Image (tube, rainbow, N blue to C red; front, top):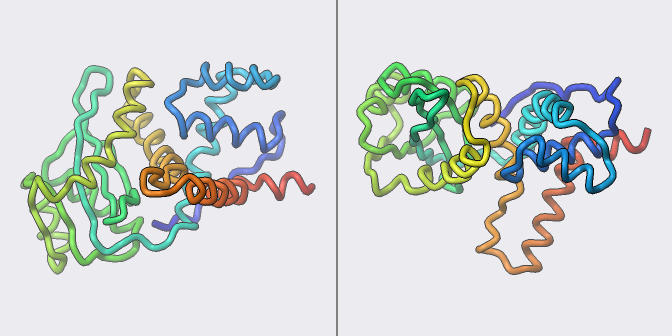
Length: 240
């Protein structure tokens, strides 16, 4: 998924780049509140308010996620699509998510419905971001997917089975954990903004440790932190 949004400027910010990107990393990587990030930074001798952390996460979170997405290899040609219930201000909404066969998140969309129009809206967003058509899509037996498939991707094979879509269902787990830690989303827009950035940043630091030896995991994490330094422009800012 490619996005060409430029990185916001650090010019005029009181805190150096290292502190800004560390706060953003803590918030999107772990199930922490802004106040908990504030406390962790205070323990390190950095006095920064939770409101400042909130503003920096809002400003830089999506930009960092976009840069990480730009550096990823092209997603696979098998897409798993699924939707899950989330409650926002007492009302039921649906989080639509697509991942490829390797578990890479392709896109997410928060909507109030899961009818045919909602499915088509998600398919359009997904195709626009991916810029290519998959070979296969795997969905559960929700009829809304069939409507969108017939209109927008008729040439793509559609495999429907609740047993084939475990990869998409499993990809919801970090989001549900984070939703519980945050207590609630305040609005659909808030949920969309957070989950778009979260889906780009959090998986970058989840290389599947259960599949790696300790040495390989440390090496992989070192490489991923190096990419993080690049996308947050830490080295460039430090050299000025």
